[in-house]
Image (cartoon, helix red, strand yellow):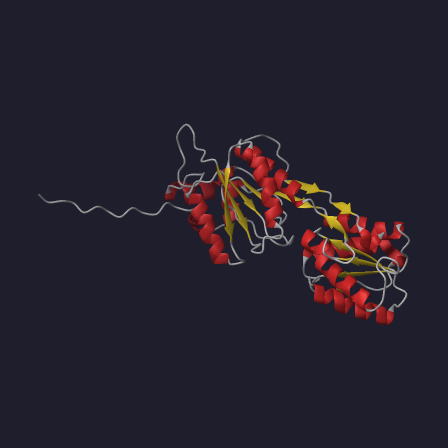
Length: 335
């Protein structure tokens, strides 16, 4: 008996294939297929024609049947250290537990190819949704996939995407206002690299809040204790009457308090110091413990999880941009 050899199965078409055939970006293809965003009708039609030619089905892997849910969610992060992802993940888990959904955690390590691999794998697993986060608040490129997606902490460059972020400017304002309320009048600001959204947004807020009480331009540097120590040396050389220091991170603040103590400057008796992030391993181990801004990452994660559930369940009027106000954790470094 002659047997006919089996033909190898062809891989399922991806949205990247649709975008390439239609001559548009993946983000545009996603909007066209999901009837969202501001697109020309001819563009939308071209994308849908390309999808039809390729046999692409919206909702990765050709979902069908009465119940298409897998009750799994992918959480994609660039934060290998887990400093920001872990508390956020705890909040996401709190929110998704109500929907009996499990989370698949993927660390891209800032590798574009690794991210693409994970995204393809998550589509093949037919996850119900995605949460995208990272270790910075710099806006990142949209992934442009036809899967319910929420960007948490690290927003998307596309305003049509769904994002939940912290109001960093409001947090920096709280820290600056607190020092003034405690009596500081000759204050400096030390923060991380100016190219980072966090450093720039916080510096702008500090400048607007302090005005003439700011004795020097913001010192931009690194998110490190070493930079906090070096900045103190620079500031005391030019401003020996300094009485307040707003730091852009807890690492910077801890380095600053250590160096002030080494130079015989009392904290908070002579110089009051605030940090940012409420990273307890830093803030509580500092001598004295740091007054610092808490961005509420766990609550941010809960809100991101609830938003994703709303998108998965098709609820109307889900807000595209949600901003959480941080809180100030007052400790001995400023009292």
